[in-house]
Image 1: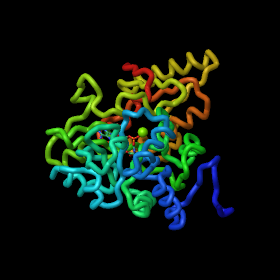
Image 2: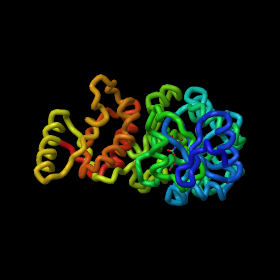
Image 3: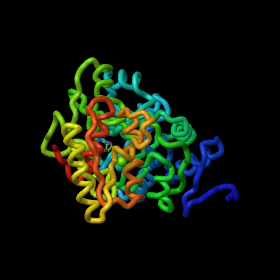
Image 4: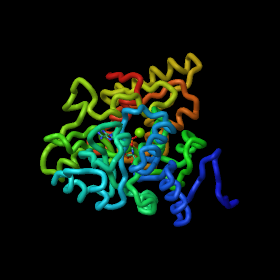
Length: 340
Ligand code: TXA
Ligand code: MG
């Protein structure tokens, strides 16, 4: 081991240079775990064809065994190695959105071990829009199965520091890069139903998908409220900060009144309230777009936890564009939703 290599506990901290990528690829080829940056959040990768390596992902994260992983590709030719019977509509979406934050659920190819998909006959696939991720997949010469690189239940990691916080000592290496630009996970779109269904809203908007397909799609949980969750991941509490989070919906003025009242009450008890929207947009010179909110959501939840607040208050945002994904994550993180 060269002296210039940094380790946090037993986890190797790597750069994005060629030597580091080839070191990381070697780990993947040998059945190890490497966390890597993508445009959405950091992923925790293993060879998608190595069942034992994939099992280690579940263990390192403490992830329930019935929650399938997403396979990451670096080139379209790899699609046939992992999926079969790809419909024409999927190719149109691939043309438009790959590389990018859109995961397509397709029939699983026989090469892919069942554990990747938690036993389902389908598989979720995407091509990340991040050079280091693409370089790693290419150098590894296999598609890489990867969930978000957080401990199960915690907010997804948008900085390599979050990965270290959650997983150092439990994985072989982390590829260090800048913070993730999109900041919220990919849209998971089921292409195996007659009409495509958004199982998880994310970085690619519903409007963008519908425009590309020229037809409408369904959104699980909105248009579809079946007896059980369709995407296994949807049933778990997620993205949870340590402090309870209350999501406040309704007209802005009324929201503000309630926030002020809760704040006064808590402070009177000597307790600390964290205002999520204020933390995210504390610099008024910053762009207050919903994209900005999305990019800073998870890191702000972690920050509020570090500040040791007793309660987090979050306000609703629009449900158009990436706002649909922001609201989905806030609802999942919330212990209560209050409508004023
Ligand atoms: O942006 C992202 O998607 C990030 C980066 C690393 O690519 N990955 C990510 O993975 O968020 P994960 O494991 O945290 O979330 C994957 C979601 C889960 O909700 C899971 O249930 C769903 O995708 N999923 C995966 N395979 C599926 C399948 N075959 N059928 C239905 N849902 C699936
Ligand atoms: Mg996740």
